[in-house]
Length: 443
Image (cartoon, rainbow, N blue to C red; front, side, top):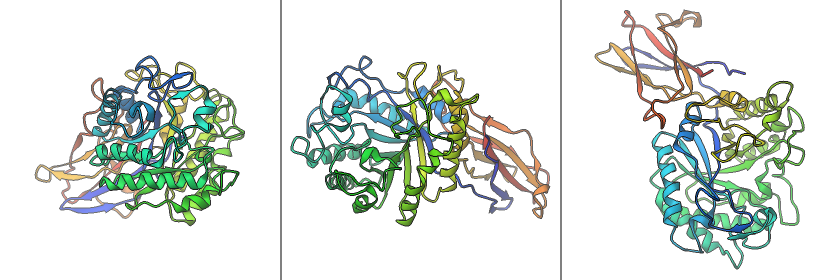
């Protein structure tokens, strides 16, 4: 399902600038890249690199960028980065993490740092209940006080405060935590981040696995997120509420079926209304549809299309999304298959063919060069660009294609694009002509 092509920017020679139209696009669209949070159940953390866990590769970052994506959510384990409360970061784990972040951000992608810990720190995890809902190691308790959480974020923010492409995701999916305790812990971490001088965006999750559909639900752990999360305080006034939403019957993302083609967007409506009413922004950090029901007679593709269309339509609230999920260790047939078999020589999975149609279209800036004989524009990966020319703006029918469309999909070299290098276009014979670039999603 292709989104309509959008006319983005046009120029008139002698420096007149026009914005012809804009889109309802979100600002960010991307994917979770798993691996560094793997291998935590049934053994002691931190574990062994390339045995218990791994890191995503530069080639994966290049692949997703070549499909128009501009953000990666990077799950990792707090216990691997910081072996004990308030300790210095483990140099080996951090070096691999930093290498990936440096590559991705140097190539224009944003990276969300995601301690995938469910509001807990506990090196001995026997089962998934301990990891996600157990009573030991909860942040804000006696074993892991707020001072340890704030120390972790103070150290991390001190490193990345000069990189505007890095976003601080406070915690993955807090659950079974007293609501007031969670809010206090998050405020302590935010204060620590700002104490470093960092102005980076911060993603703040809610309780109950930060589910969008349960945002207004209270339980034995306290008030609903819709009430409690209004007590979040950011001295830097640059935070966004991160929510997750799966489409199966219990919203867990553990089943091979979904409720209906409309359940995705329907589960976002109440949260969207809450965010709009409170003048706050939102980000969908995890969502997915089982790959087995995408294509053929399956309803998954239509459900994804409906959900992402809803988010784009409500982009005054929604900053963007990251799909769950890619990464090198998912194998050939995980529930949510989006990773290509070979990112270096990729064939898109059916899931990718759908979600890439909802990545934000770029707005090329046109610049006159070479004594008014050419203009140039940057062309981010994953899109098709058509230069057009007109001598009369009285009708949209007066625009004529200038040359062939340029498809900028496959990045040069084995490790992806070095830059979004400018494309140069020779101008027409009429020096008073109007020029524009129409961008659309690549096939």
